[in-house]
Length: 192
Image 1 (tube, rainbow, N blue to C red):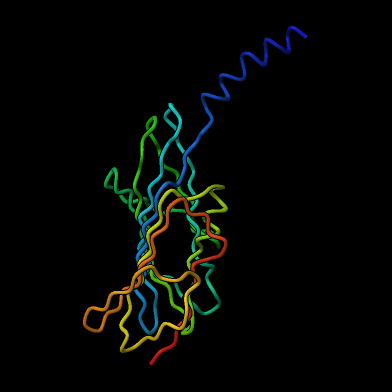
Image 2: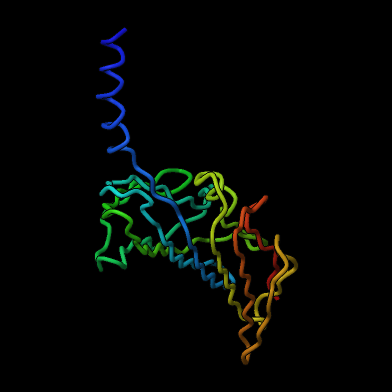
């Protein structure tokens, strides 16, 4: 019994010191919709909530690639350290890559890509991301830009908080705090 107690006392501090706790705390995403593509630029802010330096494997959900649809110009940029993350592992449902965090530090990452769309809708996996991080997002900001002379928005999964029209460009915005979405961010539209 004493040996078990001694083993537990030795192992617990080691487990605690090597436990990795990084949270997604902020997301700011811009979508640019045209007749054939959806360009996505997401700024993601992660925070190491532990007092220890950690090397964390991060997962960024992305829309599943559909048959015949292409993804182009995928870029992952560590804005905090001003370096590009080369060859993130592109999985069917998203990206995997490792980041090193100092104790209690934040990092800002930009993920950019362009997808073909089916001509009637596109999805950003907001719920999948919230489910993966198992908690509400402290702050989320989403912007959709499109040319209303070429595209008509039929509906969105979440009602927009604001609409601005600048010449032929229309900008829809959504802002959320303590956000735990119950569905994916989806936009339905048609071409003029």
